[in-house]
Structure formats: structure tokens, C-alpha cells
Length: 181
Image (cartoon, rainbow, N blue to C red; front, side, top):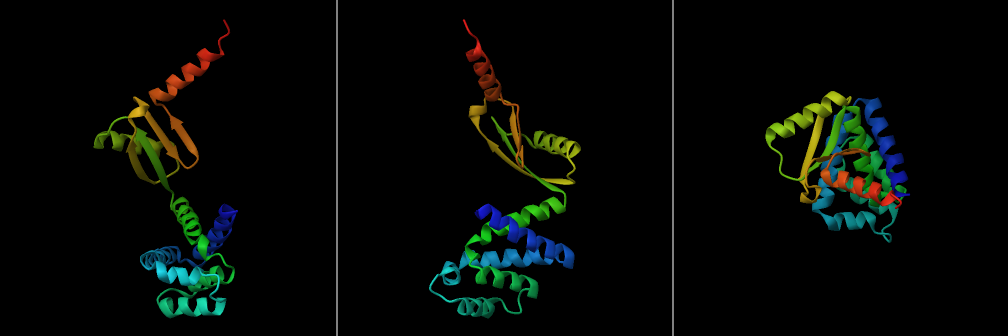
């Protein structure tokens, strides 16, 4: 349910940003509001508290942000407060960020290797991903996992390419277990 909520609200916000030509402005304002909310959990607690009535929440929000963010973004936050969806803010903004990356043709890749990769190896992986996808740039995230033994595991969105030795050994094990003697 939370995924559907974040998708519906995030898509509406993204569409508004694109239609109004304010994608960058919206992104900056949303990041600024989120940062303030993270730095001031007591403020957020008031906005999410079930016993604080809606008009008071709107007034508290406007007291802090009126004139500092666009009317469209203010309206978006008003809708979240009115519909009781303020608790879903991070998921909504994560969806919005994902759509922005997709719109700007920026891919996000998670690369896991058995050992730390050199800068040359990282560049080669990035170049290969750019040449085999429609992305114009990549946000790369690297991590190591010695359990892979060797090779790489690359994830972009819901696609995974696993060329690790661990994966190959598990495949061979599965095939050997199927053999009837």
C-alpha cells in the first residue's frame, strides 16, 4: 500500500514539475524541506501528530515555509497534510527522485565485487554500462563482498547481472543435485 501511495503522489508531483518547467526548482525545494524536517524531528512530530488538527498543521507548516518555497510545492505539502499522508514523505520523494533520474537519463548502478576495484576498473565498468544502456551518465555505488570469491554482481533497478564465482558454484551445485544415480 505504501508503495502505491508513494507512486501516486510522487508521479503527480513529478508531472506537475515537468509541465510547469520547474523540475530543478521543485527538486531543490523538496530537498531543503526534507533536510529541515530531518534536522528538526520535533517539528515533524507536530505535523504528523494525530491529535493536532489539520488547520493547525497547515498553519505551522506555513509559518516556517511561507514565501520560501514555491506555491506548487507548498500546495503539495498541504495536500499531504490534509490527506494524512505526511508520514509517507520519504517514500514519495524517493519515487520523485527516481523519476527525475529517469527523466534526465541518469542510471544508478550498484556494483559488488570480491575485492576493492581500481579506478581504471571502475571507469571500464561505467563505460561498459553507458555503452549498453540508454543512460547518458551513471551514479555508481561500489561495495565489496569477499563471499563472491571473484567476479562482479551489478544491479541497475530490478535487473541483476551476477557473474560472480559464488553464483557459478551455486549453479553447478544445483545441477549436480539434479543428477539421479
